[in-house]
Every structure is written in structure tokens, then in C-alpha cells.
Length: 621
Image 1: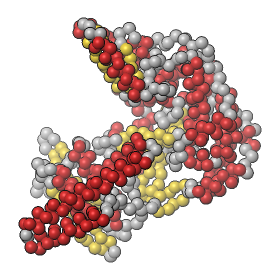
Image 2 (image 1 turned 30 degrees about the vertical axis):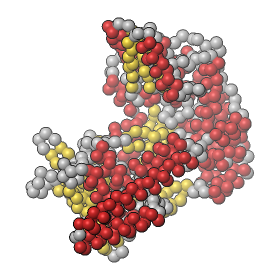
Image 3 (image 1 turned 60 degrees about the horizontal axis):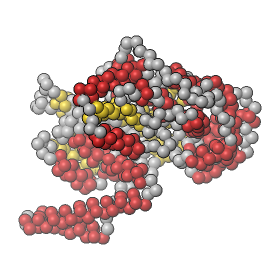
Image 4 (image 1 turned 45 degrees about the vertical axis):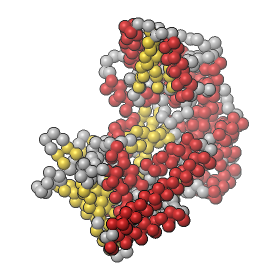
């Protein structure tokens, strides 16, 4: 390890080598001790060398190493293959740092001295580490109170006198945006530095001091007894810290109102510590590295907007065989959407979770809940105009997409999934429509009993119980039983809009109500927004909008229910050969028969019929 002092800056450079046969856990433990020693939270750190953990083929070792780095706000740099043989290539050498990408100039080159390439890391600018800045809306208590005061004095005449919902919502949005920019302006401010959480008490501190004392004594005298004592104290110290950490987490979960959410928040906080800076996203397209953030956003948008088409074309390029639509089993029609009231909107807004995330309109649920009384009247008018016309305002049909990294190389498009944020007002409107749609389905008993997803009174638990009961009943009757699990690819994205509308019509949605759903599904668009830290300031880079040709809107309220209604006819289609069990797009075929031959034959027929159904319904299995 090398320590460099430049003016007031301190930079540590750590050289590493790990044998491929050595225990990675020991290496991670050693690195952790070294990193803790350097106190990297206010110093520069660069780690280089041969780690023998391949970044090109991520596995459990890659995940373990990345978790340790993320905990210390350190990121491993994506390097190309550093060891290439006639039959393989791997990137097992590494560079990792807590410095921003712009401060490092990294390259690899052949030296002729080894079968590995050399890594070169040049520090372009050594400066004092400053807390990064970010551009965000000021939505503190005083800002929201000022916004509320501005909206109290608004009479909304332009909204009420508008001839249609499109004009009404545009006037509403203009008024709210002006007030929002006045009361809650965009500001550039330094993010608060989060101090690392330490778990210690008096007993732990005594163990630590005793351990360090015996360790120093051993290093001075070389006495084996001192080393044994130091090792024993270190184990006791580590165990005490582990106990304190476990107890703190247990207390958090016990005192939480939403235990499941708290458990996952705890897991994610340990696995991936939030970084103060957001590294620049880069993509490899047709062998060319794209680094411009706006260009990267455009590439993501094109990929996400067309992913359904790619999926369907890759699965089957031939003409599709239409599947007969279900017959009309409804006793009444949903011809129009019942007008909403201020009381209904007030109740829905009250039920929303207060969040800071916002769609393209920049209105979060936190803002909406704070100013609910001032906004309910114009929103009621806009929604009722929309229902009466069978039209959804265009600005409510724009999704803001964030690319979420999954696994693998960070430069590959396919290793990201879209996270969609819709305008808060759009989701509020959808909740109103959802109540009308579910009332119609309940009144006419339209939803198949095989469906357990997004149905009141049902859940994954009821689905599991039905599966187990079916298997037990089959075995008690002396039959052989089998289950076939169907995995739909991009299920919500692939659905054709015209086919969705035909199925809604077959379920009794007609006239103005059907027209509203057509307007809701068609002429939608999306933009991709990427946040990246450039020269110490985190900014948002947004693509141009692209049309969405297929699918139900990701992140929407209506989307999941539209999907289960779309596949509502699948159990009946397969009923001659199999029982169908569904939880949203997770579908299980359950078959039983006394004869193994007949069971295999029926399973073969059921699977082929499922393929036929999917082929005729724009689904890929």
C-alpha cells in the first residue's frame, strides 16, 4: 500500500494479488481491514492488481466482492478482457476506486511480460474531496406551504371553461407548474454526507482496545502467546459487533409497521450502499462504445420502446393463428364511466403513500397530498370531462423511464430493465377507473376463479393452497399428477392494443367506456431519464419521446388488471386437458391421470395448446 500526500489530499494506492486457489472470503476480510484502516470516507483510494474474479462472467464471487466495495462507496471499473487465450477470455485484473470517473484516466495494454495485460490508471486531478451537488426541487415544509397558499388563491376558471379534457388538463398543468416553479424551484445543493453506521458499546470498545494492545505487543516482541491472545480477542470483538448489529436490525423489524418492507430495505442497504456520486453510463452498440449521456439515453429509449417487437419477432416471425375470443357471458354492459366526486378523490388521495418520486409532470404524491384540497376541484372536473368524452389527455400518457441495472456487463443494453414513473395525476385517474372496471367484473362474475393475482381476497397464499390441494386430491384418488410452469417473456409489454380492446368488448365494455380505454392504450409515449454526476454535480439527462406501440403501461394502476382480463379466457381454452392456476402472468398447468401414457399425452397436448394460445395472443412463452 502506498500513501500519497498532495497538499491537503491523501490518496492510498493498494496493490493486490489473489491466487485462484485461495479463499475469496479471506481476501475480502483482508481488504476490509485495510480499507477500514485508511478511513476512505474522506480520502482517495485506488485498488489495482490481479484479483482473479472475472467481471465478464459475474457469479457469486463477483457479487460478494461488489457488495464489500459498495459498502465502502467504492466501485469496480469495467475493464475489457485482461487475459486472452485461444479458448477463453476473462477480465480477472481490476481497478476499483472511490474517486469520480472523470478524475481517472484508465487504459490497458500489452507489455509482453505476462499473459495478462497491464492496467494503467492516471489521476488527472487531485483535489479535496467535496460532497457532490445535485439538482432537485425544494419540497421542504415551507416550500409546500407556499405552494398551498398560491393554489388557494387560484380560481381555475381556465380549467372549468375548457371545452374538453385535453385543453382542461393543459391549463391545469400550466397553472400548477408556474406555482411549483415559484414555491418549489429547482436548486443546486450539496447532498448531505451520510456517516457510516457503527455498532459498538462499552464492552465492544474494551475488547477492541485489548485486541489492539496484544496485537501491538506481538508485533514488538514476536511472542506467540501474545498472538494467540490477540486472535482470541479479535474473534470475541467481531462476535460482539455481529451481535450488536443483529440486535439493532431485529429491533428495527420488530418496531416496523411494514415488516416485509423493512426486511428488504435492510437487505438492500447491506448489499448495495447508496453512492454519493452516480457514475457515467456507457453502452457498447455494434462494437462501438457510446459515452455521451444524451446519446446513451436515446439508445435506452429506443431499446425499451421496441423491446416487445424484438421479443415477438425473435420468437415467431410467421403469421399468427387467431384464437377465438370468449363469448359474451355478461348480464350488463359497462357503457360509460360513472363520474367521480370530490369525496371519492379525497379518499383516494388520502390512501396514497407519500413519496418524492414524480413522473414527467414533477408532481409527487407528497406534493399532491399536501395540496389535496386545493387540487381536488379542478381534477374532478378534468376527470369527468375525460370520462364523458372517452378521451385521456395526451400529457397523462407520457412515461418517464429509468434504466435499472440487473447483472452482467454494465455496457450491454439487455442487462438493464425499465423502471417506469407515470404522472401522479394519471395514476389517480386510473384508480377511479379501476373501481368502475372491477365493479363491472364483480357484478357479472367475469374474472376466472383460476386467477389469484390482483383479485380481492386472493393472493400467492391462496394460489399455493389450491396447488397443494389439487396435488393431494389427485394422489388420494390414486392418480399420477404433474405440473407445467409457463414463463411468459415480457408479458405486459407484448400485448397488442387492438386485441386488448376486443377482449374488453367481449367482456361487456362498450360505447364511451371502451372509447376511453382505447384512448388510454393508444398514442402513448415515453422518455428515458438518466442521472449522472458530471464535474461534481448530479444532473438529469433526458431523451426525446418515442411512441409505445404495444403493451399495458408499466408502473400503471390499470395495467395488471388489463393483463388478467386479457388472459381471462386461457383456463377455459385449456380446460379439456388441464386445470389452470394463475397469479397474474405466472401460470401453472396441473394435470392428473391414472395412466402414465395418458398423462404424458395430455401434457403434450396441453403444452401445445398453450403455445397456440400464446401465438394467437401476442404472448411469448
